[in-house]
Length: 456
Image 1: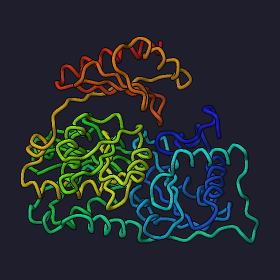
Image 2 (image 1 turned 90 degrees about the vertical axis):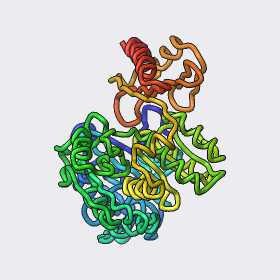
Image 3 (image 1 turned 30 degrees about the vertical axis):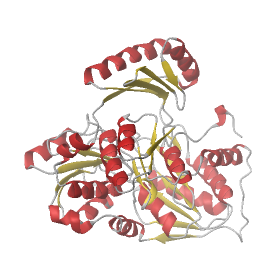
Image 4 (image 1 turned 180 degrees about the horizontal axis):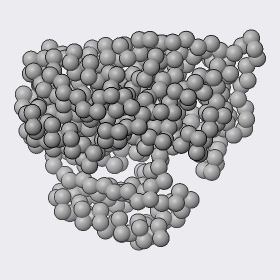
């Protein structure tokens, strides 16, 4: 298997800066390795709205056909979960999504999914890397080169799939007013039509697809969603929702204009789903709130903690036949639809949850979700020094520690801090949680100082 120095895949696929760190020749060669890995069957290629996505999609299709694979090309821009749903439901052997999710506009990447629409397991990523570095790609002769065809119904089939998994009549009765910040990303082509199909009044922000992400950038955070909050309050909307660049995550805003971490919305949905499936299993990474355990206990359910990354959450969810999964970044996984993060499915499920609860968003969160305060920060680091930094942090810290992913320390039974290197950027991420905002910020400040000292 490839050494640590020969890794291409990070937390969520292969990411790079086109024309800077990687060129189209790299994409073609990697796609040949991907086609070789799959071996047989047709593959689907989808792309988000980044400026480089069209060129990368052409290169990917070329590489896959060069390895002998026939390729379906999703027509136009599609959200990542729409492409994944199409792979699962339309008989493809697998697929490749061209996206860099929330990364800055100059980044892009390739995400590889299996026949179930879920990102391939980590070991299979390593198999592709081995083919790539061993230069063992299949090179089809002129009679065996694959052919490409357009797949025009990917988004329509996706929306039909989401609508089939929620109670649209119940939602329509509430007459919700929804403010949607599309962030100039891929959900521009899907989410507005979903919400309007459920009888909601819709106001959109940043609804023009644009790979420069001029509105507020591709990453929805409390810092970038000020306009969403302001509009929700000013018009008296029931809720707001914002998506990341490729549309697999949803961040919500309550009727008071409060931007909710994915922990809070994820826990609200987990409670709703587990209430209807007592004794179920909730899957969530080590970076999410300890409120998950409290909710699971109330619903006679179990919590399985994974490494950070949707691949790990999805694969664990499938292996354990789990009921629901969520991440702190707004990624939610609802297996009756598909076992991947899906911003539109999350939106539909949230509208159903609020309609069923019969209360405002803020009231539902305060009533159903145990309250913990989480804060986070990131530190720019030299990727080559990550191991040294982590060893220094561990050496300089006392208390109960866990090593599922990075280092998670528990200063006491109700507080924790997680330090882990990002799998997509040259940064160290730090998460802290406690029962009060002041305590969480104090813990974060202390460990931020420790990490910076270790990085010096």
